[in-house]
Length: 137
Image (cartoon, rainbow, N blue to C red; front, side, top):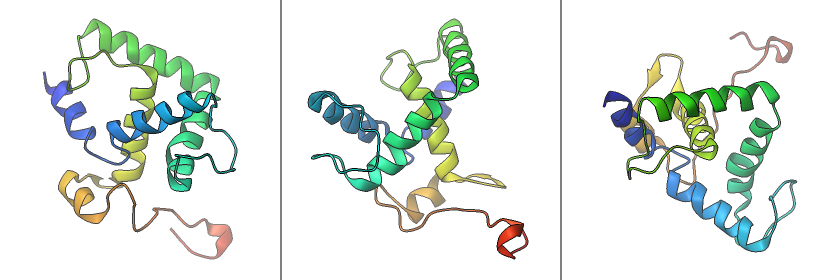
């Protein structure tokens, strides 16, 4: 039950589940995977970068794909579903991982702070400077 509550809360974080489904519906309608950096009518450039390209990179990692399959098997075994009761799929897992990446801080995830800080059009991007750039982390 607790896992379902966590998934429900994560559905509200960027990228929202509805937005991801909307972007991929447009790509399916156009008959494209949306890869690359070129514009596709109906898909915003930021959505291409933060959703389409990131998920494509994730799906290109063999270890990641295997881990997602393990998570899906565990979710099915434990009857963990999306908030609407639909079974989780690999896109849901990837979206949840992106939500954690985009809304997580070293000290945790702050659901209300995240909603205050940005929406579907974030006003900032989180990064960690590297020592090569002359900035200590």
